[in-house]
Image (cartoon, rainbow, N blue to C red; front, top):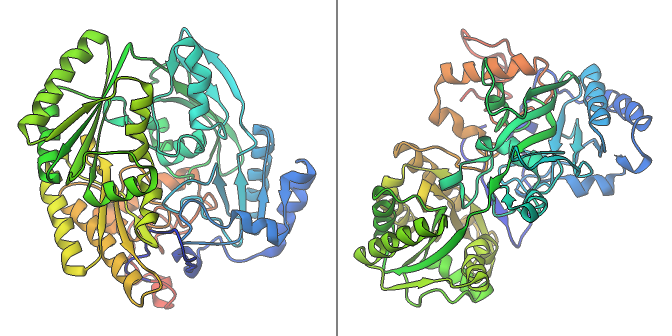
Length: 518
């Protein structure tokens, strides 16, 4: 197993490929249908009748998450409604050593919630209760299936909101956000999910319910909460999450600026932040992304722009007014030929509509595309964007760029037509080469989508053996039997079933010819 596993989201043709995990047998995930049957028998006595799914046609509903490139029909799907039920399900899996995968709304883009054919898919979509809101403490305790935007809807009448806002915030769940440490447009100023989670009630891979963190802003000892957030379901399943609520700003002002090139827009971005202004968001779209958005939602972005910046300022009115002057000045100084300001919520919504619809809009100009995700230092934007343009020119594969310019979180959209021989493979090469550019620039292979199964092969490009061994030892402390979302994040055959630490000589699975060591 080598090379690019792909990050393809298909808008047209259906692509089915065997995910890497299914070709590399782990020490604890041998197909044992009788073990899954035993788990099913146990959970049927604990969950409502419609909370246990074994019918093949219904199981197929859950065969992939937001990355439809990989599809695996799970052996069993369960939909617990309470923490007690979820713990009982995981406990049954632990006793039978059956692998399980947690899934929220299924919007992830790295295959992190891809099921196991020999395992149980634990779906938290029925756990949607906001359990507690403490306005004075600016805290809320929610179940993992609560939709991200629902937290803000509950908080808004009291003058608060939940800051992390992935583009899928209308449908993605808090539990999934915690698993992936999700970001969003406004994370430039407010940070990622990890900056807004104060506590997690977790069901460990052994089925035990534990609490990590809580209402207090900090706790002594090791930062276990920081380890859990972003662990992609490999350390257990959250059953309750304590989140921080943020006071709604007094003033919000949204600016749209048109530039001749991404170089000019990138230079303006660096100038704004270099001047000490910290907008809530700075988003960039290049000409191809603008073309797609216009075709889909007619957002009326500046005609002829090679790039646009969408800058949002929030805070006290006097502070926003001051920052607005600085932002417009830096945009014009770096070549902005048109600057617009949204005067009301309707205009603000229209400006954001083009940006937030960009991913889906690309389907208007290409039958298939890859949604890539990487991050670079913000100051490297001009050279990395030029390098991506060079890759596109030499390969003949078009790349549309729409991303969080303020924090260097790239989302290149690699366009291709799967029906044309070789185009899909060429697009995957370009997609992988973009990740190499991110690493070379001092960045990372993921900004906010996670590693999942899709990018696990890229981990050795960022980390050496010692790094990966250390990560495995942390994982094994939580999940020594390797049953909690196995096959994600780490390249096989680096497994929790292995004894952590150094290995001498060839790996036995490599010797057996069933897997390669990365």
